[in-house]
Length: 339
Length: 130
Image 1 (cartoon, rainbow over the protein chains, first blue to last red):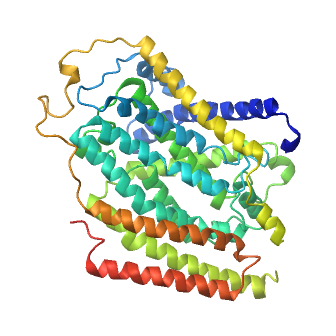
Image 2 (cartoon, helix red, strand yellow):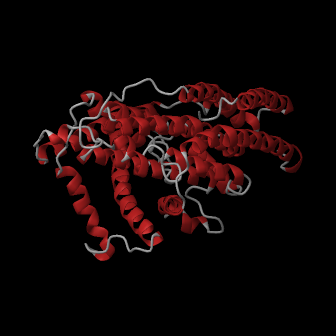
Image 3 (spheres, chains in turn green, purple):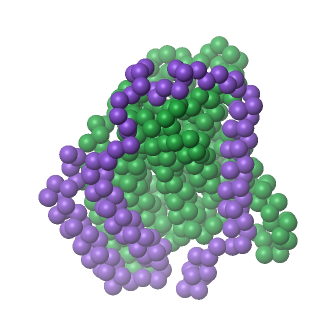
């Protein structure tokens, strides 16, 4: 915390260590999520998922990653070459930076930024730009349709996503994710007073991470593989690493805003405090598990229904709910809370 | 309370360095990953591999066309609502401690104006997908 007294070199090297840890978490999360996705989707479809390599098929990850590395990186003749090469990095970099403000515990935060929530949401919303660059540069009709749908989805669902964060911000009186969690530790998990916000956030998080029922950018049965149709090998790998990380980031925001972050109710601090990061990550994977169950259960929205849902339903509902909550909150703090 | 609320909105120096480091490390990792793949993978571009992935023959027509205006309408609406959200966040942060009923009423009026606009657009059919 005494960052004011640090030397410049010390500051940059500490920053490097923080970022390297985050990068390691991101790569590790990619591996875990791929395995989990296969297993969970497999069991939902009454299959077993990977079983052959290693215990319960977990070593399947190693050949998967090697295969991404050593496959030929084909690039089609008609692409806009530089944009096509840059697009995976454009998708990957903002997702990495989105981890910066996530509070793994009270002290384990890469950058304890006072506007952490806004910054994380800002980085997350840069991702569709990279997706669009990928689809546009591919110069493939399917890829371009997928990319346009990604942008269309992003602009209709980002507003309710951000508005759903307003109620926890109101309750905590802060935009710092760590302080929002501490406010929940002092009172109750915000999912209880702000349940509608949590539900809307969950729906919009599904959209933001491009998952069924809102996987319009990919929609593999209509558009081959959507925006990533022309990508192969490691470039494809980066796109999907970013996608899985996006899941984790959205889950982590949801955990910090609504589900008490690294804290547990009714558990004494002496037990919960040493395993705080474990609790946080476990909660995140629980949310990711819910994403996967939705993904394995529902079918895709039609594109016109999907576009209408955001502006016609989610935005008015979220706005009105936020105002109703604000009035209730003000009444409560005046008479009930005695603040 | 007021002073701490304002101080709480500033960035620290260290945090700026971390964000800069995120950009540097992100770019470096992307270069390493793609570079490793470039070194390890075979390169054998045959004629067929260069064809756009569509139906096996050269696709007819360029996909870089003018796109339907439905997206444009949504984009304009998005800008309006995004600015509205930018107003709501500071209001929400300060609501519990600094603001009174006047500010709550002001926000209700502000949101109501925008919602009336949205209702009008709904009635005019702008939100449909044509």
